[in-house]
Image (cartoon, rainbow, N blue to C red; front, side, top):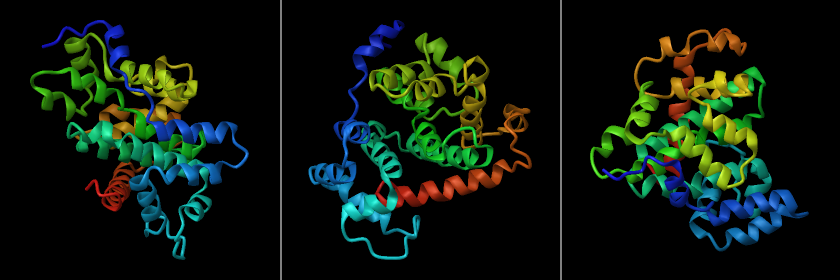
Amino acid sequence: MSDISDNNNYIKKIPPMPDLTAKVFDFMRNNRNPIEDLTQELANHKEIEENILKLANSSYFSFGQEIKSVQKAIMFLGMMRTKNIIVALSVADMYCRNNYKKLYEHSLMCGIASKILAERCKTINPDDALAIGFLHDIGKTILYDNMEEDIDKYKNSLDSDVIEIENNQFQTNHCTVGSMLLKKWRMPNIVIDCIKYHHTPTLSALPGICGLFYIADAITSEGNFEDKLGNMPARLGLSPFDPKSINLMAKTKADSLMEIVGLK
């Protein structure tokens, strides 16, 4: 097993933000015509361009008309939703190159569940919640890539003991590494905070918002989550609360999205 106990070692292993993702963030911050600029940029990323068109024309969004151009697709989807789609498609390689499809599916489910919960408790913009929920486990793609043995035990571990397991094995955990990644990518502080504390929301300066991702992660993970949730849903005003229906909805939508873009 590699000696990777120092978090500084992980900084060297953190990849730069995918080029297209970096550009879409820049377009949204600095450009007067972000749709036009993004349309031109997508011409250099044919696979993602094609998948955006597939999604825009799918029953998942149900716009009610055929969308033939990516510029029109972005207009219908909106820049915020298009940004989230690009983030999900751009980082897919980080998951799929080492067969983390199970983790990718869980991440999609968590993002969708986070959006559903955000629409109900109104603590955060639902589109932002979707993006944060999707990225919550991104640190695992870096942490587990350093392993030389027993990788399946860790890369597929979504249970409540995963933080303890990681701390014992690596002297760090995916929450810390994920927050380091997103800090390097210059993501907003709220995103970094939510990723860092999604297993320990009471330690965050934003416990209510982090609690949302704690719940979304729990109800889209494997195993019994009833005890883990405790009174967290009630604290966020999620009453009545039916986690099984949210899990099923998130699973159905995640399967649909993965099938549309060829990851299922």
